[in-house]
Amino acid sequence: MIQRHLAVRAGAGALALALALAIGASPVLAVDGPPEPAPPPAQAPEPEPDPDGDIEPGVFPALAAVVPGALVHGVGHFVAGDSDTGWALLGAQGVGLGLIAVAGVPLAATGASRKIIGPASAIAITGVGLLFGPMLPDVYGALTGGRDARAPAPVPLTARLGYAWIYDPQFAYTHFATAGYDLRLGDFVLDGSAWIAADDDNQRLRQTLDWRLWGEAAAQGSHDGWIDLDTALTWHRFGTDGFSRLSVEAAGEVRYPLGRLSRSLRGSFADWRVGYALELYDYDVPGLAFGEDVAEQLLIRFGWGFWFDARGSVALYYDHRKDDHAGGFSATGLGGGIPGYVGLAADYALDDTWALDLDVRRGSAWIVGLGVRYRYGAGR
Image (cartoon, rainbow, N blue to C red):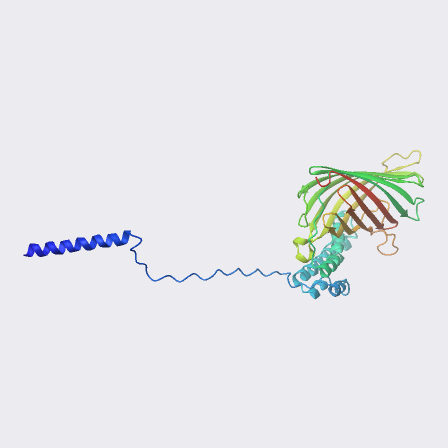
């Protein structure tokens, strides 16, 4: 009896195990639990805050960048609501004031010793540029809020013909025929120019070789900057006045796209160049050999400009050199003979083949020049 009862229980257990296995293996007979709640709908990520998104550019902020912004740079951006850029421009002005002090103290203490006057003058003049220069990008950013303008792509070969009018009360010339070329070979650029007077015996020939140390040689875009090493050889003959000059120079040049500093400055750039020139003079005087009169010159240039969208640019600049036709400001009294000249340079491509350029300078002379450029290989 006991054995029969155990057999029944064993049979029932085997049957239950078989049913359980069948139910677990069959999708039709499977019993699901309560349905899981549906996941909440994905939410779009919140946009990151734009530090320049609240800027309100316009005529009033641009006017504020001039008055009182000529004395306190960055006011235009403060009025437009972009305080970060305003503080950056004000800080640049402060750095300029500091550089003037750093250079001016040793110059005054040593009586402008020849041992330090070169580097100290370079620091002081750069400081002057930072002291006054930030007003221009302040006006630009306060008026436009930044532009998506790109730098033009370099052209393999450019040939140029032009005319220049020069008013200089010290010399007899007025009208000049100008010509030049620009040849790009990878990281190197050959740039030559000639200025030939039509109404006087005066000729200026210049050949430069530029080496791109940093930055793409064929870069294009408002976020592209570069560092160049420039060398040049210049021969200038004053036939009517009985002398000529041969100059040899080397300089470093930096272009910084200001869109890296602030979105409101997109489409604009700043330039800075510093170098040294050695000048050898030759006089039409019997017994006076070439090179007996030697001079040195500190080369400094800084400027600010903006691009037309991939077609050209316009730039305002100060150049400290005094050995070209513009010369330096002939101011009298304290500081007379020290300043160089100011200028405006602009170029604009009409299409892939032709472009126009404008050259205006004011130093001891006035210069206004116009040119036509033939661009070979542009757009390829």
